Length: 319
Length: 257
Image (cartoon, rainbow over all chains, first blue to last red; front, top):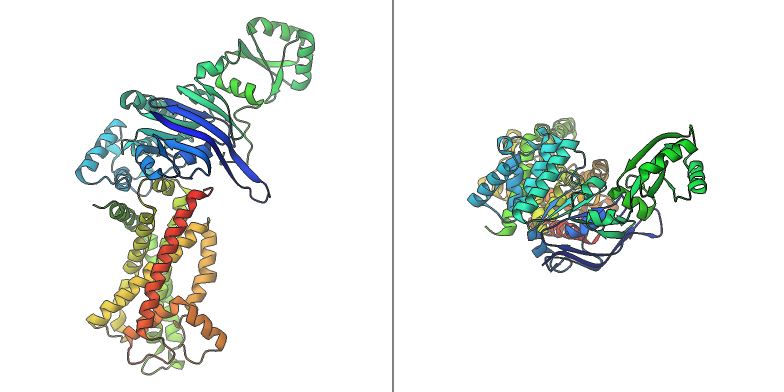
């Protein structure tokens, strides 16, 4: 069974102070299989958060269709809700309540109560290593621990699909790694389907498949390896003081196809290590630093859109 | 247990726990009205006479309504906070009916208003207002209606307004003036025509009037609407604000939230 299916999903909303509507989604078709980790990779403003809001049932799909385990999100959202666990980008825990109180409240909302709820809470707290924190107020916990409570809360109701919006926001690298280890572990142990939005290429790498999104459209889809194979060979980035100028000179002299992205000259080509000394010798004094790498998802994004994942348009924070 | 009830009780309990843990709030809604009552009541004592009532007695039911107004409406201000944090979103994507959110908050607001208003009500005999068991029961019922409907108004406002500053502004410019012209401060007889109209369409008028009927049945001034009308208006006020609150929560799903 498909965990998620959307067809020609569109979403627009009136922009503040402008007569034209903002088109946040411009026709999204998605097929997410059961049991996979599926990522939406894109910068702020790419539409991934709007997509998250629709899939988490916060917003009804206005045009096109979306269903979760064959429950249509427009007509049958309540059935879908029972099958979804949601982790929001903003903390959804009540800071003035203890860890246990938060989980109990959450269980109550899903119709769980009594001894079975108690047992479930205890089990979740053990799974996430929170047993000794159970009676602490959430406001006293660190960011990493809070995320773990969020995850424990979302999984308390034994969902078949876990949806996370930028789950590593505000986490330090080790807490991020821990979170992803937990997500991958859950997929393996519980057969959970996981959908995650992110603007970080390395998080995309941990997905089984992903879509690259930009300005409300899906630019490309597939496994990380397949997406990276769009770029042959290596990726060279040359940092210099006048990237436009240098880019032109490299094109003239070597016939390569450089581009300027985020203030650096970027060249995709095979056997990059042989090319670097030639460039450095040809333009003495102009090169400040050179990096050589295998293509990353960020490079795929740059290839598809001409901009970096971090170059989000500010002011469209809801992307 | 029924799903709606379970979710509503859980949300109500959260309001109670939060209130208990947020100590300054415990006195915040109670103290200002009591100070008004002491100062204004004492200040006008010499110049006000209505039947056998002095001003601190006359002003008593109005002060109670003000305490309920402050506490009930301010308790729903947490809706703004809940919307900004992910808490409310997390409730909205759960299978719990949206009316559970409203019921939990409104009964929460009403309970908090009661907890803060009751000590003042208990002090009534000290100023010579006698409460018999039957009038006390009716007064409590009226006060519940007042607390519930005012929480409903607060809920709707908090849902629509996205800043606490804006909420305070509406409270001070909209609700407090309504209270001023509810008969809480002055009797409703011999008012200029325009004011009389405002008084008559103001639901708070009927809240204050119902309490005046209970507190001093012998001394109600001219122009007070009959008790049964007050009861009907308060019941309608509850129903309308509740319906409005449920409607406003359902509206969000078709919008960009």
